[in-house]
Length: 506
Ligand SMILES: O=P(O)(O)OP(=O)(O)OP(=O)(O)OC[C@H]1O[C@@H](n2cnc3c(O)ncnc32)[C@H](O)[C@@H]1O
Ligand SMILES: [Ca+2]
Image (tube, rainbow, N blue to C red):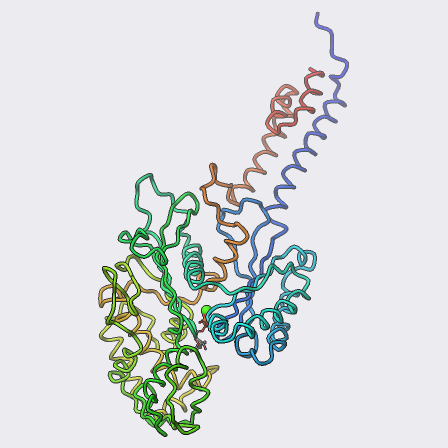
């Protein structure tokens, strides 16, 4: 007769089961906490030409974040102009960021402050200041860096983004938010058609970025950016036009009209009845126009509006150079551009302006959009000014006719969108997070988008919860049924030492 194992008593079996449960619980609770409890944070300051904005991003703490769940949880608009405007008093540039940084301290839990990366990226305003006066640009960076070093976050540096980076990270953001990057493409299958192009219109520069079959980078390597994201290769076309943001183009249009130094101009891009005195020095105080300053002019000129969209369109066209192109095809100013392809997301000023004008519906024929804008431009300034527009600055109100005309001219004459392809554009402000380069920049710097697709996709959270519940129930019933089943289940949890104990008991 087989001798009874002295360990095989109800008490030892009970203890073993309890120990096993504890291990299982610790294991699963640990994973549960990693997934649900302790999010991580990242902060990006977008130091644009017109203003600075702070964005706080949050994501689950799991290491290989390929779940596409980085979310913008808060944003803060810095009061005052962009940091490049503080060239004559750089300390103020640093001080201007403090209110938003204090806000960040409240929105990121204090126990996470130290490990939260903080980045500042500057765009066209600082690019222009750097061209104009690199010492002043260095001093502004010094001041903002000193100010950000005082924050409790892990400051990772302040730098100027190249135009190419600005365009490429804007494209990454749009496609990440649209969930376009994780689509699995079969070998030799073309994945380019499934991405969204990005159109960003700032105050001092504008970017166009898209994937095109017709572009392999060979014709114009400077416009080519290669990405490998989630196992897919992308050869992105991107170009940034410095001075073609809407504020600098307005300067160029005014410079065009004041090149002979008159005391008054009649501007078709401003409403009839608009009349403002403007300063020549202020107008020409930018590298985008400084070379064109008239040799003799009074201190000021009177800027008078005459509200004519079609004449405004002709004026705006004069800021583009369509005469030279050494490539097979160009957009403008001799810049190569392959044939447009795919849907496009247009954000920043594209959205602000078209949204104000009620022209974001691109299923409306392009001709009707132009007619609507022509009607708006011919509205007297007195009517526009006195209609209720809560929260809209008077300066923006005065400029919407010009801005809308510039946007349509840039898209159609500049980038070659036609009546057919215009409908492929979506004017967007947000897709859960704001559209812009900041999210793409942070995803890149924190290595959040893997080059290769993961072998086994992570369990979605709902799946994870059912997994834990299933294990508990399965294990409980199995253990109650027999110690042998209990032994078998021990291996499931890879708890080899516990399994050895069980083995000695049976
Ligand atoms: O990219 P850069 O060129 O550095 O410029 P930025 O980052 O400062 O530019 P934004 O996208 O923030 O804004 C683009 C332009 O839109 C203007 N803007 C912002 N809000 C607006 C609104 O509600 N209506 C009209 N224009 C607006 C702003 O002054 C800029 O001239
Ligand atoms: Ca910008």
